[in-house]
Amino acid sequence: MTQTEQEFFKEKCILITGGTGMIGRALGKSLSKLGAHVTTASLDLDKPSWAEDHIQTDLTNQENAESLILAADDKFQTHTQIVFHLGGMKANPKVTLEKPATFFTKLVRMNTNVLEACRLARIPHVVYTSSIGAYQESTEDLIETKAYEGTPMDSAPGLAKRMAEYQIQFYKKEYGLENFSILRLTNIFGSYDIFSGANSMFIPSLMTKVKQYREDNKPIEFWGEGTAIRDFLYVDDCVEGIMKAAIYGTKGEVVNIGSGSGTSVKEMIKLMKTVIGFEYTFNNDPRYNGAPRRVLNIEKAKELLKFTGASQPYRIHLRDTWNWFLHHKEQERVDYFQEKTYA
Image (cartoon, rainbow, N blue to C red):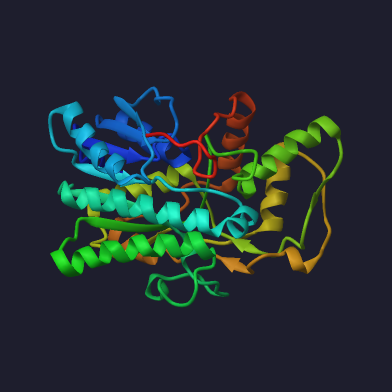
């Protein structure tokens, strides 16, 4: 980021929902270094070391969402200037298919509550992070002009993400508001990711398997042929795109944040092997290949946000993520699939 872009955040009062997650932590840490006053909010209890305040709350409750914005105002005796709404739900494809009602109802409630509270509080800059899963499946790179065609590839969560996007666009139509930005993020990986359990995604799940491989010394078996093409982006690069959305805005339009290229599952596994070393096999059953291609076109982000995608080769980011995984205890995180929530 340029010096001028960095100075934009100095002394700003900022709220990050989902602030204890992978992206939220990386974003908050970066903002704090630039002199921003950062408050985080999530279901988790622990306050990040760089945050000036942390609020444990369930944002599927409307009163909680509204009081959260007021609590941030009271903390700094000034108006919250930027809200990064990263809060959401994360799970692997199996859980997504098995619990569509949980995904849809909780995501819709949370997004509706937070975005409406931001509108009522007249927050100057609001950045909402949606997902690549809100697009329909395609054999071509996913582009914003086709954002609302077909059925979302991630079914219930993809549809819930679209609902929030529509809410933002309706604000623009009815109230003339252009201070809300919409970002559709690709597959993000890095430190503080979820490395085990039902909510683990491809790269952290693979690293967990490699760690187990080192204990058992048995080759890792992957289902499918490894031909599916995916778009992977390191968390720090994703954070740069999110921060630039606050600076330049998207005026309620969808903008993609991805790496700028596609990588097959097989290529990523081979690359991972060169970084950390392990043996593996594919069962070569095409039924488990998944969608053939999920890659974002980022030309609009380059034009509007001056965002250029991946900053360094995957090898460097995979090594850094692996080293973090080995030397840090995975943090216990509360999620919306658990029965207990917090008032």
